[in-house]
Structures are given as structure tokens and as C-alpha cells.
Image (cartoon, rainbow, N blue to C red; front, side, top):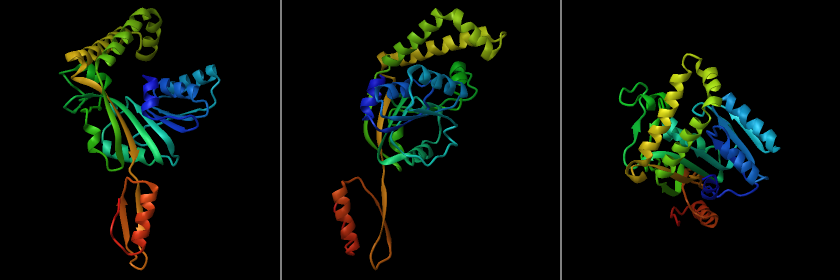
Length: 280
């Protein structure tokens, strides 16, 4: 799947890459190793994740990875990137209009944004903070959203869709089953970690929570043979905006365009000649 992300995002060696919500760094490390001339920046939410990724960079002798710890909803920067990738972060976010607007400012003019998120085929719904209906979901996905398959298509003020793909949910169901299998196989090694994070008195409870979470994921994504809850991939381009000040008229014209450079140039001369005809 990591290779699919790179192919769909149209990654090329030498590009600048931003991995938003990079987690434990699987994709950032994969890109940095496969595309040695790429400069990879990852944004995560945990100092522990940052330390782990930097340790792995040292193991692999990678010098082309930079990790930033930040809350993406509040984080601002001036840097721009050739490719931006976000895998499984949008389920934890709200206000997609403002989020995509922010991300668009980090895209170079010809940059692309690749997003993966889980989805329901029809309905979008909130993950309630205190849900009696699904306690496990409220614990692990508090404050997030389960988007519908087409939800991001309604937020194209600052980005414009280039392509999108639906991935059958059985893929994620098998992934969740594998997580559960590995957790059970490594129970003895995991126990001290649970105790250090949740305390000795709560380690057993939280181990049960994590097992139940993986089981829940496997069940819902396998429902109806993976055709009800699925994974969706989007590729967006930046929606460019150009302001022309017409000669003598001194009136700004805002053009929302998706055309080639030659067409844009043609339009520029038409406007400057005080001809308001648009040939796109």
C-alpha cells in the first residue's frame, strides 16, 4: 500500500514531501529510503513518535527526514511542498473547509495533495465524545468524523480534485486482524508498555480496549464483503487564483482557472487589451 500511495501521489525523486499526520513514520521512512533525493517533512502529534522516527532515521542513516511535533489545527508555516500526503488523519479532524484551505497554502503552484481516509459509502457522521452506543469508538476516535466516500468533494474552494479511488474495506479488515494477531503474539512484551502508559491497575483494562478496537475495525470493514465501510483515496491539485489589474480600467479581475500556461498568457493579453472575453 505504501507504494500505491507514492504512485497515486505521483512522487518523483528530488521532490519536497510533506507527510501530515505521519504517526510512527512508516510512510515518511519509506519515501526517504526509496527516493534518496527527496526531502521529507513529517508532522506528528507526539514527541514519542518523533523520537522513534528519528531513531529509525539513525538506524537507516537517513539525513533527508525532518519531523515536526504540532497540532495541525493550530500549526502555521510558510514552507511549500511539491507533494503533500495525509494518510488516516482526516477521520480525526473537523472543519474540512478550513483544513484544506490551510493545506493548500503549503502546496507549490503545481503541487499535489494525496489523502487517504476511511469512510462509509453514503453517510458521514460524528464520533461522539461519550457514546453509550459504541464505547470503544468514543475512546479511540473522540471528536473525529467518519466521512462519507464523497464528502471531501464538497470542499473544493481551495483545492480541486484530480482523481479519486475507492478501496474495498476487506483490505483494512485484514490489516486490523493482523494487528490483533501480532498484539496477542507479543502480549508479554506489550504488558510493560501498557503498564507504563496506563498504570499497573489499568493495564489489563486497556489491553482489552485495544483488542476490542481491532476486532471492531475488522468487523465493520468486512461487513457486506467490504462494500459498506471502505477506504477512499483522493488526489487534489491546488486551485490557483490570479489577480489581473487591467490597463486604464484599474479594476482587479479574479480568475479561478484550470488551464495551461499558454492559455493563461492568452487570457492575460486579452484582458490587458481591455477585451473582457475569456478564452479558456
